[in-house]
Image (tube, rainbow, N blue to C red):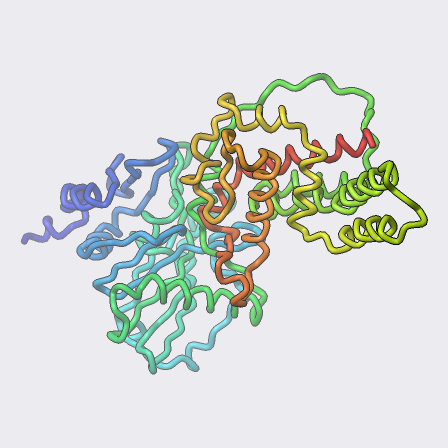
Length: 439
């Protein structure tokens, strides 16, 4: 092969072919950069930019089959025992290495990467505020190794494939090349290709946890579901004109509700926050139900104040109220506070819920909603579903008691599929608040 054929410009067709097999297409190519888009991109202007000089590295990475990570941005190359997962700073969503991370290279045992075989990394230009580029690039890297396991872990700028299987780094309105920081792991021969993703996530999360506790640096993986959620567009509905308030709501309830509204970017937290509004009214619902039962006992023509049996019946009603389970409390609250016609309207065909509330919906281990159910009321179905989702969020316990309640992790696809259930529990909260006005 001639020198000309070894230049990066000789590879576009080969790269385009390999990318096509992995679900990408080359959007544009010039001497400085290559722009690549996913075939299933939700927004056409979301692209991935890679400097043309990195094409050879990209080609080497793509020589073996790529396995995208499940639920997170990132990939594995099983044949190379290679794992990569882009990360970002939790507080500022920055995708650069925090300067508080320190490492003494002299204290690190030598490894294959310190002797001329570094892990692939695309260092972005050091852009200045005036638009110029500093001649010295921002080379940032934290490289750690464990000779006992023949394993190295590193946080550095993403590799070419880390850019492709990471969040888009190119927009139509900018020509700047930006990148993400990635956790990269290269395992030794003791790890099988099938174990790469599982062990990679465990080791990556262990490193991120220690960096948080020991170094005060909070980094997190980039959830695919979160990114997809941000790209969805929901048209605004017309609203009635503002009015002088006629709702008398306690400050605590209003604060809980407003917090839930502000937590919508975190679906699990938003759901639990609306659930807290319902919890606030649990004692009220139980008390009201108990009083109704007591009044019924007293109004019974057979009630005899001098009879121990009659008095014991009243005591039994009161005693049962003190032992009411949370599942029963929410069922009582929804049954007595939420209008049936509003629930029917919510689950009606006008709302585009699809199969979300069916047994084949995206949230597992919860009650499905069946409007034709003859043995269980709609309110009871809703109460059961809401309570089960709440349990899946809060019961993250290493306890056999909760073995059949799989935790609903906050960054999982299930969490970001919760939006219809969040809308449901929000409706329940507004109905319960409304019902409290009429009591």
